[in-house]
Image (cartoon, rainbow, N blue to C red; front, side, top):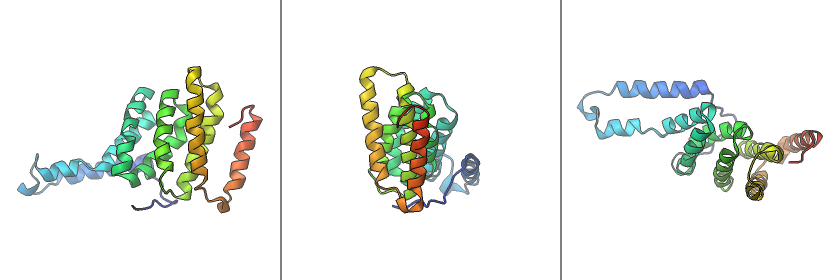
Amino acid sequence: MTAVTDDDEITFEDLTERKQDREDRSSRIPGTECAPGSIVEDLMNSDTVFGVEKIADVLLSGPDSERDFALLELSQLLDHCLEDTIKILIPIMCSHVHEWGVNVQFRVGEGLTNVVALPMTAHTSWIISTAAFRVLHEAPNLQMVESERGNFFELWGSMLVEALFQVDWNAGRSQEALAFLDECSTHGASP
């Protein structure tokens, strides 16, 4: 398993460029060994990064119903293309999850619970922790069935605890965490 470095950031432009490169490669298939419909072409077209890129696109611009559906693939992606999933999808999910509907937040929480069970970089654990803080901070304002509220807090709270264990606290993260908690408390809710 290859670790993703803290400095690796993927932008939407990078995703678009990768997709174009993939399409260019498949259009230059030489001769009969890579003829259209061959096994080699099928393997080239099943590039896992494309799956991750497509899901990234849905997460960034799709409605909640499409996000919810796309996130059903998260456990498969964690099994088969962990590095790209952590490098591309986790930052997108963590940046936007607090803006999405309750069902999608549940789905993201379930997926991130699988991620925090794995060894992570300090950066990944930090962005998951801050996402969990944001979600828990906004949770009192969410419209949800009262019987689901306890499950929601348990899911995100337990994930937060697991992620916090892997944060590099010597990198100034404790001051950032305290500042974030202060900000939450001044807005009238606690994380």
